[in-house]
Length: 543
Image (cartoon, rainbow, N blue to C red; front, side, top):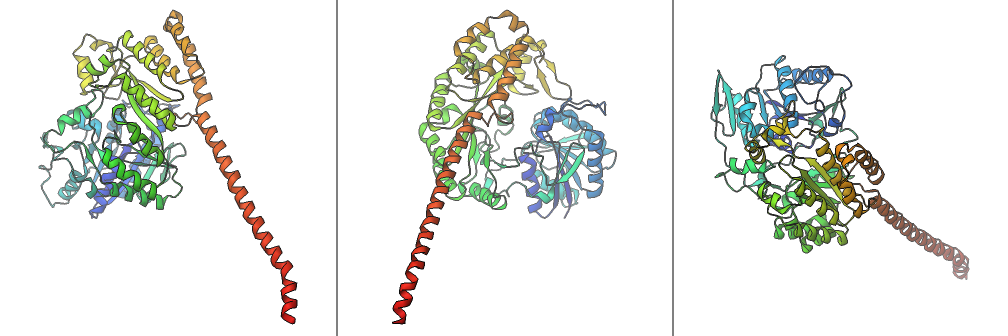
C-alpha cells in the first residue's frame, strides 16, 4: 500500500483526478487530494505580487499557500505526486513543480487536457506526463514505483529518464465505464488550500459544490468543434475503441443515490456530459429511475439538434430546470467553415421556442472569434440573439486560441496570425482584450439578454462611432443590468424567476399550513365531542 498525493489547480470539480483517486484507493492505496485554490478565486486579483513567477495574474499562489502545500507533502511522504490543471494554470503548475522539487525528489506527474494537448512542453517540466485517461496508467505507475512492474513500458505515459524521453502509445479507451469506482468525494481525503488557509474537506462558501453535486454519465463527445479539445482527442484516440461511451442508467442512479444519502441537502445535480441528450432510449430509462429514486432538480448541456419536444418534456417532468446550449455564432457559414459545426439557426430558434413554454431556463454560449470572425458574421450573431425568447442566460467569451487546437492551427495559417498574442503563463493566444473593437462586440452581444433594452435600439447602438471607439458606457450599463437582473452574479439565478419561485413556495406553504390547521381543528372537534359524550357514557354505565 502506497501513498499518493494528487493536486488540482483552480478546479474543485476535477472529475479526472477524483476518478483516479478512487481507482487507486479501490486497489488498496492511500490517496489524498489537494484542491489548490478554487475556481472562483480566479476573480481575486492579488493585492501584492509575492513572487515573480511566470504565471497569469489571476491564477497565482501566495508564498503562504505554497508553504502549506510543501509542508503537507513533507508530512504525507508520497510515492509520487500528480498535477492536474487547465491551460490558464500552466504557468502556476511550472512554479509549484519547482517549489516541490525543493523539498522532495519523488516523481512529479502531470496530466489533464493541457498536458495531453501539449506533451512536448509538459515533459520539459514534469518527470512523467500522462496523456488521455489516467486511471489504469496511474495504478500501473504506482506498481512500477513499488518495483512490481516495468516503468518504461506503461501506456499513456511519457517518461523522462537520464536525459532521454520514452514516449509510450495510448492504450485503448475504457469502454465499460460501469467498472470504474465512483469519483472521490470523501471529505476526509480532500484538502483545500485557499486564501492562505488549508482546510480538510471544507469548501469555500462561493463554491457551486456546496449545495450541488457534479456527475458525468458519459465520456467523449459526438462532435469535433475546432475550438474544443475534442477536435484533438478524437484524433488521439483513433483506433483505440469507441470514443463516445455512456454508463448504464443503474450505475449513474446508484452513484447519485449514494451521494444523496450522504448529503440529503443537495439542492441541484450538474450533469457535466458534453452532450447529455444524445441517446433517446437511455433518456427514457433514465427518466423513470431518476424521478423514482433521486428527484432533485438538475441541469444539462445539450446541442440544438439533440433536444426535441419529447426529450425536453420528459426531462422537465423529472426535474430539469436549466439547459446549457452552445450556439457560438449566428453565421451558419462561419459555424461550418471555421468551427466545424453544421448547425442551422432555424434549429437554434426551434430549440429555444420549445424550452420557453416548458419553463426550462436556457443559458446560451456564444464566442467572438476576432480576428477570424468578420463584422458581418458578428452582426448575424447579434440578430440571432435578438430573436431568442426572453428571459435567457448568456455567456459571451472571446475565443481562446489554445495551442494545438484545430482553430488555432487555422489562425496560424491565416493572414491574421500576427493579430493575437500569447497570454502570459498559459498556452493560449488571444486577440488583445483591451481592443475597443473586441470590447464593443462582447458587450453588444451580452446586452441582448436584457429585456429592459428595447430590441429596436440595437441598430442605433451598432452605428454609434463614439461607443465603438470607447464602449465603456455600454460596459457600465451592462454591469448594472447584470447586478439588477441576476442573483449573486449567477447566470443560473434570474431574479424574476426566483421571485416567481418564491411566490409559488409561499403559496405551497400557505396551502400546507391551511391543511395542517384544518387537521388540527378536526382533531380538536373530535376531542370536544369525546369530552361532551363522556358524562353520558359514564351515567349509562352506572345504571
